[in-house]
Length: 297
Image 1 (cartoon, rainbow, N blue to C red):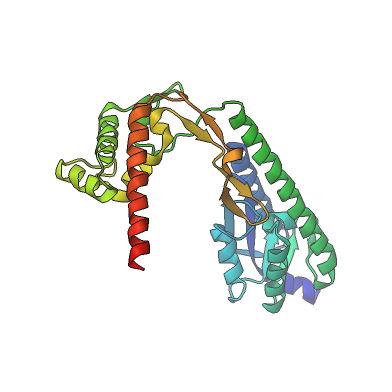
Image 2 (image 1 turned 135 degrees about the horizontal axis):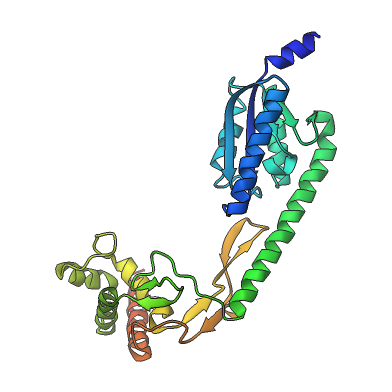
């Protein structure tokens, strides 16, 4: 009886997570949060906070709510953490054990409402196995997603156009078209580069002419050289330039042999000849700089 009375006084928080921000997953996240709140009410606990996010569970990176919960474990703000299942909290074996250790050291409890059970240090082996299985599931899922993405790009899929793609825009029907005013600025960059000017000098010329970026700021030399180097401006799209590596948890460059190059995929802002001339001039400037530095040293 005494234990039941003490349980009723527990201060509870819950953590809810789904992997993506797709609409169906958002609905799942809302349901998950509602289920957790109902589980807290059913046990007579007092809800004091909630940690909810749409992030991958494979690591702690970018998971602001999980990291907030992890730090709050050491504060006297709650007594029990409520989650749907172990994989909602973490799909990474190492981080699971770190969380469990901090939970135990802080004297907090962890309640799985789907199984209606509390975590116990005696379950360390079982929960460790679950963490390994969850991690392996994520690894295989990541491989499948990478493969599907690679297949789409290999089959001449639709090119990605970000909001930073200066000179281009996507139309209502999904086609890519040139923005004439921005394209004229880009051609000016290529012409100046082909004439032997470096990024900073080109930036100074454009600034003096009153040219500004979409954000209303002058272009930097780095911005200009990055655009000059981009083959998209001659209509060539390079796909599968990067891929996610689950083992490192990082997005890595794909070797040239694994990339897919499609010439004439989108409208060209500059000709092939001008693109080659500008990039050759940029290469020569870079080579001279390297020679100069080696002579100085």
